[in-house]
Length: 554
Image 1: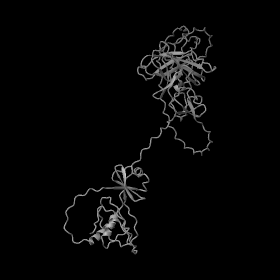
Image 2 (image 1 turned 180 degrees about the horizontal axis):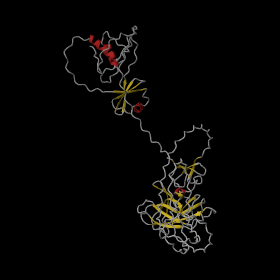
Image 3 (image 1 turned 180 degrees about the vertical axis):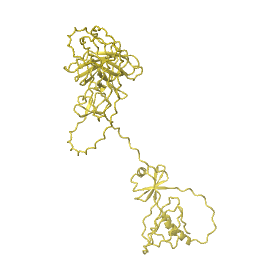
Image 4 (image 1 turned 60 degrees about the vertical axis):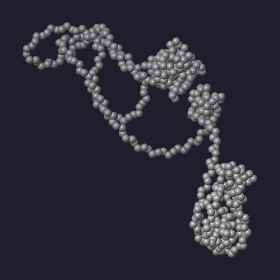
């Protein structure tokens, strides 16, 4: 009886069936499964007689086991379970893997891999090349079953070599293999150190890993912990700072660049506006014409009135940039002539007798007579009264000589105000129970007017307080003596009430008349003190000094 092909047949089963069904179509070693199906079907058709009566339906067979081949491996080695689990960690039950070195199929069931045998037959002898048949219609893809391996057939005799058939069409592209599972996420690397670069060092408290340049040796240092010694240069404070890097040698001077072309001449500035014409002085009222008396003797000249004191000369400003010459303004009208106090008038000579009134027309004026001889000098008249005091002239402009900030503080060795920040603003904290000081160094500018002393104007606020008084003191030292010894002049003080809102600045001004004989051009030191032990200092908590202005008191 003929053997019929089945979709689940392995290639070996198909070879066995086509060999059992006699016919003109002979199998060849190079035949694909589809060619074998075609040949066994053709041979089977040759052995089928008229169909007999339909037999009774047989009982339903058990479901076959479905295997999905997910890949292959060169060898399973001595421990197939470990090798396959490592190579295919995502495999599930029903997945199969082919071992290339044996041709065996390993199928996973639960957690165990089983060798189900060789699914690749041995290589047969090369048969004669037959004519290529017509391509048959593509059949439905059946489920892959696990068939038993048939017995190896005898090697047939080598047939004559057939002519080369035409090249077959390119087969369909196989399906994409299963994507491998994502590898495990690597462990997190160690956290790096964050450095805080601040540039040139200044007296302040810094956090650990702060990098700063020493102004003493220009080398770079790194803080080993939070800095507590805020006033010692890093190059001298080896406990809290360590050398980070040294300053390299200065590079060679680069060659001078080519001189650029001379720029074009800028446009002329606009002509200045014409000055406003000054007002014309009011004309005095004409007095009544008195009768002409006889000319009296010339009285002595009155004493010259006292000269008013000159106003204080303001500080000479720097020369401004010379602007273009403006057009000449209109000439103002002549102001009224100033007149000093007039001395007492000499005694009036007696009036001569009045001549008779003439009735005729006035005759021509006769010629002027010759000047009579000069009379002798009369006695000196009494000194006239002192004229009234003139109005006070306008006040001169107060000039700022120096502005000082907390980072310029050069504190004493003990009892010093502490450098701090508030909203990134540098401040000096003055304690409310201990007297603390801050010292600033500067130079009085040339042409400064110091006859009335100096005014010290402080900007400060309370750390937390919203009420209470703060007692401030200021003292000056002229830098013309030994700088190893303090020699501040007598201090001046002021009591100021803090603002009712914490953080709002207060402005306190102290006039300092004892200034240690400082003159223009002198160096000086200014000491600012909070007298926290005074009974008048009632503000609780620190006072924060923000800035200081030194200006003229004139």
